[in-house]
Image (cartoon, rainbow, N blue to C red; front, side):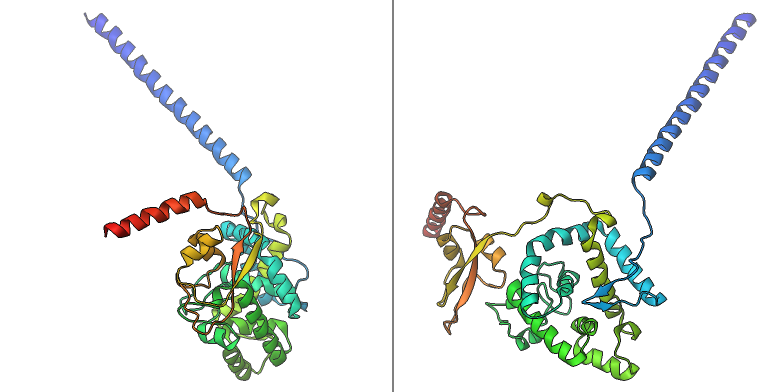
Length: 330
């Protein structure tokens, strides 16, 4: 009996030892698998420090990269905008649609082409509203917008009109250039306002942007604009790869002149074979579903050409009939 128990004990010990060996072996295999994964991850994903250009200019004015504070400020913004990949890729996509129109207006007003990057830095070329109440792609405050010829009220807000707000921004830039004689300072004034910039010029006895101590936002502002310019001028160098079809293409449109009241923009949209949503997409400056237009001012409403989000007229009539039946029931 003792001999039998000894055999059972020996077999049980061998079995337990085998289990331990298997567990250790599996753990080693798992570790090796994890290591292979991590090695592959490291091989395919890496964060690199970026080389700054040897020379760079903004609006034809040299950026003094020999100054360590200038160099480090630009390095910061270049890193931020390179590794904020989703935002910068969206910049590239939207710019393909909107830059041709912006470039044309800048050229017509004698404004350096680099000022197109200000619209990206301000808003990403979408109609955002800042905590301070600045609106649209060019981020105009209400009073400043009116000062530069934009209509702003409950029915019409031309800060949302990219073409008109670009022209208004150009008027601001030209006026500022007459004051400062320097495009970099013009861009700085656009961010912090001429009155605030003039106060700092007087306080610091300096009128060269790169020599001035300004608030955090304006201190970073020009460098952010320049960083966006650097990346967008050579996106592949900074890791951005895309095909032409990935970019947002310009959409052909035409304009309809309106010099009377419009009672219902949904009905108006239907007349041009688009729905209310698409009408507002192309005309975000129309702020309500109607336009009283008491002064019979002429407005130009943008409509996409045929083939670009046109509605099914039969479906529209079906919905219209359904709504009329609901109104009768009520």
